Image (cartoon, rainbow, N blue to C red; front, side, top):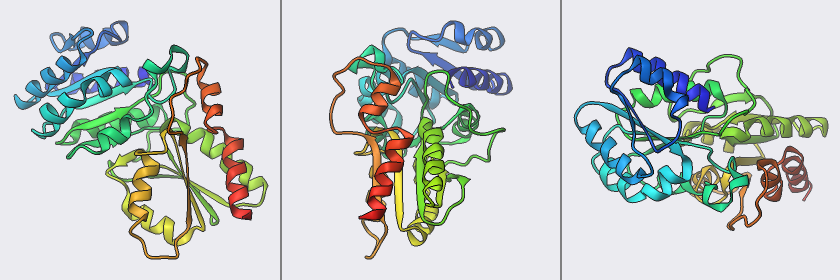
Length: 307
């Protein structure tokens, strides 16, 4: 995903002289082509991420389109005040890109886990929060963000994520992408857990449970038109994300659904728990700890349908 981001931001930088890339002490070689083709528009701001956000806000106020890039927890948690006050309060078009979000850096310990940042940023007025699922959605999300006149946060995986789409899909902020049709269960997947969700749908299909899947890349604004259709049609809706079950996609959908009249379908939330992971392990082990596997998702849905 990060390679796709580098390629896309370079292509957009060639087209638009307003595009400026700021990095928080990572990605130097990754952006060699950007630096070569867009001279004077790359700034390594060092281990000073909060300052990077302030610089980006100033650039945006002067008509440029700055993009800030570094590891997800460092460009979000560390910079929350600057994002809130410098970027969102002034409603300037800064794009913030966090790489290695969720549990992608599980092996580096809790300082590198990023399982709450979508919920935090979703609270900020004017901020859009995007979680693309693969490299094709990354390319589309970056283009959409640089067309958007307001702040945008994009969370990325790290590397080696499965490619789900065969070409760049139609991508609009606030609109989900249909992946599979079905009529009993609907899986709403955010980000890199989309392949896992599709596999869970396959397992449920083998159990004669017809399951639809959507890529809900837009956490905010939420695709409320789709939510209305899904909650009117399916008997069980599940949200899947590599993020806390509090505050992210699951939280956004629960807030929206809470105002629906009864009866309404059951809503299951799959994500990380309200806890810190104190083990140092690889991403797949961390996912398994939180029940974020295709089999675990299918099993819990099957039990819920049977109860």
